[in-house]
Amino acid sequence: MFSKPKSDEPTSGAKPTTPGATPAKTATPTPSSSSSPKPKPAPSIISSDLTIKGNVTTTGDVQVEGTIDGDIRAHLLTVGEGATVRGEIIADDVVVNGRVVGRLRGLKVRLTATARVEGDIIHKTIAIESGAHFEGTVQRQDDPLSAKSTKPSA
Image (cartoon, rainbow, N blue to C red; front, side):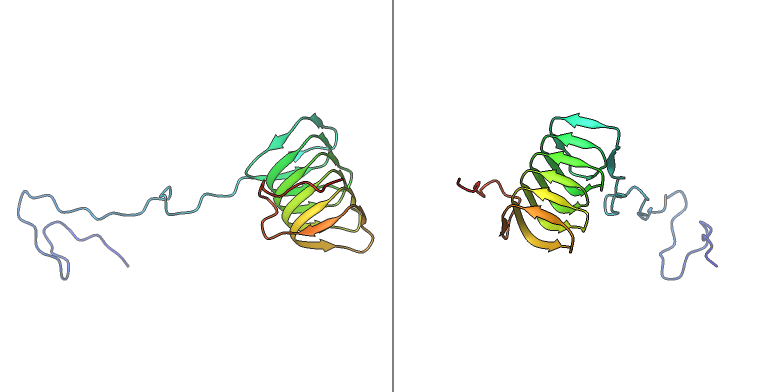
């Protein structure tokens, strides 16, 4: 269907090239062009037999199936049904199926029916399914991820 014109044949609407002149090259996009979006990396998975004592920070997604004793900062955080997180969670999107002891800050927060949360939740939008166990306060903020938010006074 498409064929490359020979150098001595002018294409329709194109100027003929003079002998010995090199034709102008047209830019063709490459697959690694900066305009194409990068493929999303796979989420980091903390398996059920893994315990982390310390903070976890990433710009990507994290799926916790084990235990974390420390703070977590991520884009999307999923706390698995058998998982436990003891510390503050800061993420754009948080889905809790397991246990969280500590403050939770997120743009979108979802507690499923198997969730057990002991701590305050600061959110932009929240969903709590029937059967979820929650002890703490809930506060809505337009920007729950910002550091300017103050801790509740005792």
